[in-house]
Amino acid sequence: MKNLIKLSLSLCLCLSAAITAFAQSQYVTITGTFTKTCYAEMSLGCKIEGKFSRLNEYTIDPTNNKFSFVIPVNSNATYSLFVQTKKTGGRHLEPDVAASFPLDLHANQNLSLTINPSELSNKSQAGLTIEQKPANFQTVSITGTLDNPVNNKFSPKITLGMVSAGAIKDLQSVYTDISTSAFKILVPDVKEGFYYISVGPWKKRLYLKPNDQLAFSTDSRTGMPVVWTKSTEENKLLSQWDELINPARVALLDRKLDEPTFTAIYKPLQPKITAFLQQVKTSNPRFNPLFKTAAQLDNNLLALNMLLKMQKGNYSMSLRYFWEVPAYYKQLIPENKISRANMLQLGEGKEYINLYAKFALTGHENNADKMSLTMRAISNDTLKAFLLESQLEQLQVDNYSEFCAVFKPYKKYATTPSAQKAYDATFSGFAADTMFIGKTAYNFTLPDKDGKMVSMKNFKGKVVFIDTWATWCGPCKYQIPFLQTLEKEYKGNNNIEFIGLSIDRSADKQKWLDMIKEKQLDGVQLLDDKGKAFAKQYKITAVPRFLLIDKKGNWAEIRCPLPEEHDKLKALIDQVIASN
Image (tube, rainbow, N blue to C red; front, side, top):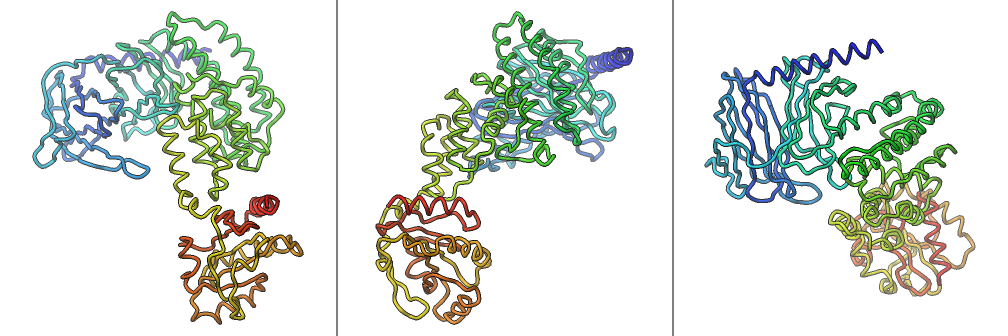
């Protein structure tokens, strides 16, 4: 306790010195707006004796067109503002227009900038208007210092993030003063709610309201403890909560941590958490329910992240589901399940949704079963949209049939722009297949290894599995042993015929015949000269490709799982055999 008091006193003194330094130093406050909604990145830098340093970075998007910077002024420095607009293209934003503007800064200025993105020009220095006046919107000030800096040669980067649909989106970054480790962040036009401040590996949740003034000090290596000299009742409660659960958080950072050791820390924590939450009642009725959701989410994430860490001992490993779940977790996690939509006002909301879905999938292999269990795990329809989006990114479907089975039943939950975009992007990969599936496959005839012409009509009443391959294709040859294993399982089954269809050139017929003999390829072997008759007709641009015809002679699937995915492929074949 004495050591803690000494440490707290030391941090208070550091913070007091930092705040005094801020009061005595000469700073410029720069605020501004973009005249049009857009995506953009901004940075402020200075050059002293030929050495350039970045001071601040800011991110603009269509939901946020205001910005603010607080910059220490050095009479020997020159300053510049860099603006880079972004445009949508493909899956990520792409650079559009960039311009750099010199800034003439003097102590204690209040500058107001107006940026017109449609007029930005580096050549003509157009698109920027500067006026000497204070901001015309509300701001929140966050001031402090980092004790025990990680590297005394470089300024630590402090990033403030806002919450966007259950995830943290970087808003602005500042670089601390090397000599004092002090920093100041000015947040424009704050919308009340949770924000996150981070340095390196640690992050801290803050609650901000318009015109709040916050000041604190913390250890830059761990983020703990946080000592406040200016705070609000919401942030004081958040610090008390951090103090309660930080022992479990710290334990999770130990790479050698095992489940029994963690449970010994985590299980006794539960009654303390229950008692803590029963006493929560600040004067802010908007904050209270959101804090309780945050605390419940934090508590559940500790257990879920321990399960994730247990998978081969790799904390950062991205797994689709958990295999082994201790009995204690099976009881605790469902009891604490969160289904309130205000979870999306937390930066960990999406993480929780995904991890809880993984927990619900324990022991299940089939993608359709996974999706059904996943969507049932979350009862709130608003949250289901975000869960659907994450599953579209994580679950691998091989063909249109599987897409229909796995995702199509849940299309109604694609209610957000990002979820709809993810659904459409996944569907587009199979959209072209719909013009073939269910249509006749009796429209091509090819020569076999003896030169005899073979039509699909010869196999009427049978399911036909086609392996499209080539002698020069390494991946094709890799699949041969798996395919042969599958063929043996159906040997003697008159309901199915296996066909190998090579797209080698007719001029290389002998090479094709030699490989049939070398690899001991069974079934009917056909040659499609450079894909002219078959492959091009069905838009096959890469091999191997595996296709399936039903007993009626219609395409059941033109993009089957690879033979190495034995169980998945066999289940599809059995389904087609049984359905006719």
